[in-house]
Image (cartoon, rainbow, N blue to C red; front, side):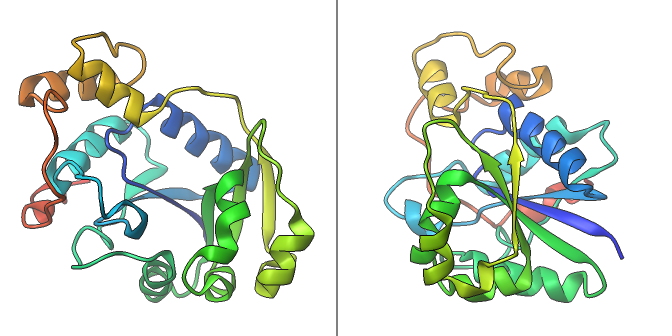
Length: 215
């Protein structure tokens, strides 16, 4: 039985902070593999345009090259409508029936878990690998009272403080400022080559997602 980390996000764009967190979580939690799960249309970002899936997937592919323990799941970008974590995990459970799934999240996400769709089913389908963050306080007793299935399913991990944000990267590109060393060089070149983030992005696209399945 393998232990697989599931790392969800829009990755718009993927940056070094994502990669460092995934590597630290993999080591600390004894993961055999980390699957990056790029969002299709996140339900909490319905009012924000997202870069088309094809570009986000290609940038992920470029960023993950050279690490045999990292991979990409297309579960969310290939299905219509808002994508909820509980549904994504149900699909992944069927894809990896003999393995143990660990859903990777930040401490702020654990705090908000009771507000997610069917949080008990989320905890039943995967362990919760939680990256501890400074200035974020989570009352575990409150979380467990609201989500009983999460009790004894939470794995807390200390990760380095990495103050890189995708929103800041997009803003810097729009302002013509450097993003060197915040994203892998191949991702930086891809952003430049395709003119990403210079203007307002368009709604997420799924129609070309399968074209980058060579990951």
